[in-house]
Image 1 (cartoon, one colour):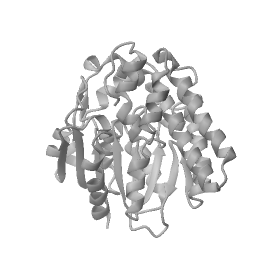
Image 2 (spheres, rainbow, N blue to C red):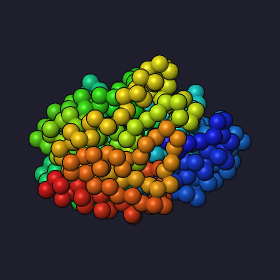
Image 3 (cartoon, rainbow, N blue to C red):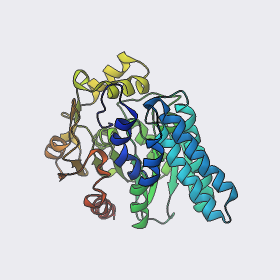
Image 4 (cartoon, one colour):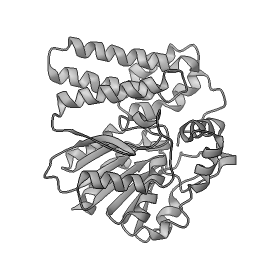
Length: 334
């Protein structure tokens, strides 16, 4: 879920709310402040970020090396993705451009990366074909495969293969699909496409629910980690901006309410047989969202990691959870 924003936030409010998320996604904090300080209103968010992303694409065209061109395109993908965090007319275009920029970046920087597509997912498989294990990175409500590069990089550095994905209602698929609570069916398709016997999962924000729900149903999940994932949602208590995002991603208010009603891990947590790590930030407090402590307590092999000063997605406290969680996944899979 996104951090709770006030109704009709100002540009400054929106920029402050998304600061650690944007910098966690790889945007330079100084450039982020320069771009957001020039916004007359929150309505200008999308165009400002798209314009910045296109400047990086222009730099890529002028780059003196393939490496520089790839790095510029990778950065463009991140700016395009962050452009989607506020509603605007070109939101779907920005998601499509993020996808295209990342595709070109990986062609230049990691020619061995493979695009995998299925009925309900799309994404990139990176890492060695002889990797000792494979981890699937699952995004959240308004995130996508271009956002969590730091998680992917940490896992790749440890020798694991990583599949960064978009599922229903996410990233490149947001314009054509809607969110679904039975995400384990999507993860089953992903594992089939990967051709492996077992995987690790790491889910961020609403992706934490998707990962826990999948681990409860899919026996090929050998380890799962959730980061800022909800244990339960309450529609009536959710802030209006979150309800608005859910309504768009679910395809209507009725469908969104039904989806939220299904996001409850009370009965599923005891069925999670694999090793489970639940990471929460102590400053991540959104009305209507129950954080992950009950999930860790009810799961037979659950452990809880609380970072008291961490915010949503813990972009302000990455060293307090990411290295140890990447090590934990490596150990659980090998």
